[in-house]
Amino acid sequence: MMDGRINGKIYFISNAGYCGLSNNFENSLFARDEIMRKVLLTIALLVLAMPAFAQEKSDEQLRKEYEGVAWEKAHEVKGQYYTVKCNSTEEVARRYSTVLDKLVSLYNTTFPNLYTKKMTWDAWIYKTRREFIKRHAKKARVTAGYYFPGDKRIYTYHGLFGVSGSTFNILAHEGMHAFQHSFLKSYFETPIWLLEGMAVMCEGVEVKEEGKLELDKPPRDRVVQLKVELNEGKMMHLSDVVGENAKPFTRRAYAYAGLFVWWLAKVEGRQKKVLDELLTILSTRGYQKNDLENLLQSHLGKDLKKVEQEWRNWLRKMDVEYTGRKIAGGTYTSKLLHFTIKRPKSDWVMDGEKAPVNGECIVFQRKSTGGRISVTVYINQLPLYADELYMQWLSDLEESVGDLEIESKERLELKGHTGFRIRYAGTEPGSRITTDKQKVEISAVVTMRHIYVIRAQSPPEKWERNRADFARTFERFKLIK
Image (cartoon, rainbow, N blue to C red; front, side, top):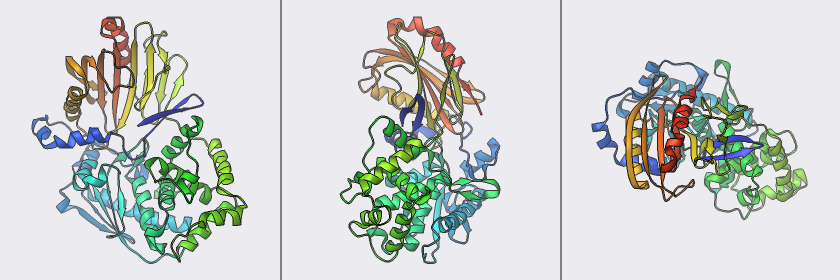
């Protein structure tokens, strides 16, 4: 994950919008999966809520969704456009079937002038990200879902990704690729920026009352990425993404392509004619060099460089929901991530000069004692057991901390949610905070949606001067609705 600031507000986004935990974390976890399962205590399965139709669910309902059934007994639901195979509950399978059919109708409404071939597709939706990774290891390491044109099928899982995404958003993205298959003359001769740009655009779909779908806002996480890069003066040029000599398409480019297509399709102005005509052309032949540039000149009288200025001005004016906000008195609250925390005393500076790093939401520092406190939040995608996370953390510490000395280990509970605390000392050569020896206390709380990590550290010789404040900060960490 990465963090950025815009006008003093702190934003929290994922690198591609699809992964909340690092690949290294997941790789090491699954390598030990079977061994770990034999030694873990039996505890309640922590699950993730599906936001479709925005219904509140009990823990028991959620638990059943993630326990599901064996894939061989997966539920099959045939809709108008999709046959859904899902090994969560039958209710979940039916909901996804309804969503996918409504998405096709939304695509047709958004692009009414396209001639689409009558097609039907499949969607295989696994009950957890864990199972998706096991069955599609190569693809699942880098994405939360994918569409394979060869068998006209979407593959994904029941759960969350990024800060504000879910299976619903994945289906909106991959469903657009399936829809493109129904009107493009040559799927494989279409530039990747257009394929992915249209798909990213559709990640912004929202479910309203009575299950109605609306596409009124671009996807929040993608907007945040570009707003941060724009604010820090690190934006790529559009020519690097959609130009004739574009650079290789990377994860970073998804947001650029998506918001450029959004601007063409949804922002009032003549630029909509550019996209409409481009898609009409591509329904009859493959993409040819300068197609985009020619249409920009024809309808806007501008080249890509001038269009980029107009696009950036639009982006600069956009409002976006930020992860959290600082409140007078040293409090930080995140409605998006459902927590609040307050600094221990007034001499702790909120968000110091070297913070945050590695996806931290907020940092408190006290220079006189070398004390540092941070909060990092991960989406519990897999989902993980608290004990499983604890064992993995211990293993990672042994690999990454030099001269490791573990001082104490204990269980935690916060508002009925389980967790753990590990206190240790050592050096971390790969740390972006400091490579000097530190004493560190990690307090982790695992909920149905998130993993909250409160990290307190200081030089070992100054630990006692910080101890009371470290404890007080954890007491002031609260989970909110």
